[in-house]
Image 1: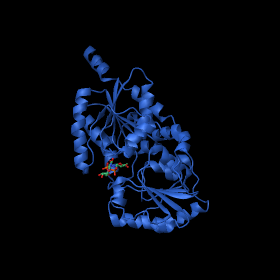
Image 2: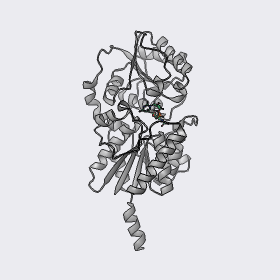
Image 3: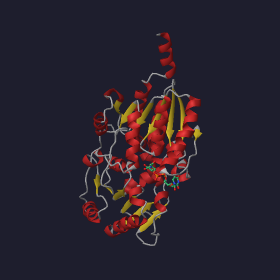
Image 4: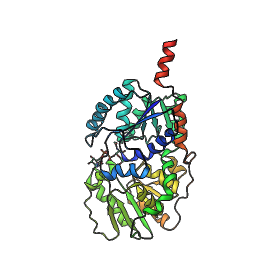
Length: 365
Ligand code: UD1
């Protein structure tokens, strides 16, 4: 069976690594890894391949950045050629980035079965590009692999057949569980004892420079008693006016996976608008304040350590105060966030009849 994986952006990589590794252990599978090139900077992509121990991509489509339409269309055109040449039996896509939906649409038109890892998550906010990517990808997927049972409920409500849905757990946590012991060797120098770790990259928070700078100012104002460590996404860097001149603020370039894992584990609080970080902090038991009005990962709020604070400095201040005084949320780890989701995903994928044997069955009939 020939399985082709499509990755493109930083958060795809920690999800794909455990699936590739689990399938690698199965002799009957041939794998091809395609990188769309949506993320291309060394510290947004290559360093993750190194640290996660992933094989280098077999093919890089090198699409780079662009408007949503241009980037998505470019991935579709270039990937179509690859799929026509390589003729995989199954394509696996990950998460909710533009590379995910672009690959999903190409597979649907070429009638190649496609599996979606991290299916079913919904923020119910269609102004988020990722929500559109999630909805469309799930509509055309043959195999939908969910990280939490709210995903199953959402898919059933949208009319997806129950037999296509498989609750396998959170595969990004597999990578975290495997690499956490290595994080100690990757602690940054000169870290204060207590600090808030910030990440911001959602277009709705960072594309308007005035708003972004207001958010950062209000975080600094609220975090009077804490140092603030802020690894800055390239999208955010363009809009950020503030320099490193506030003594308590440390601006960093995007940091590699292991360094960021160590930063999260040791933080007093994480303040973010990322999706994956809501999940990682829940696993690590670190309080997380999410600068959004909604989340597609509700278990991190109902079971985990996450609290939605929107963009309100008052809500941020109230929640931060609780955390600083040791009264932050104590969470639980959701079901199947256990380091074995990659194996469960591989088991499901290997049940897919390959196209060669499907043709043989049809010919014999
Ligand atoms: C993308 C995903 C988002 C995910 C995020 C993780 C979509 C719609 N969004 O957002 O869901 O949370 O990745 O990082 O797919 N850039 C660089 N170097 C790079 C990549 C990007 O400088 O290697 C800059 C470019 O100026 C680019 C901008 O960042 O225009 C945004 O990159 P893009 O891939 O369009 O979206 P992200 O904001 O990274």
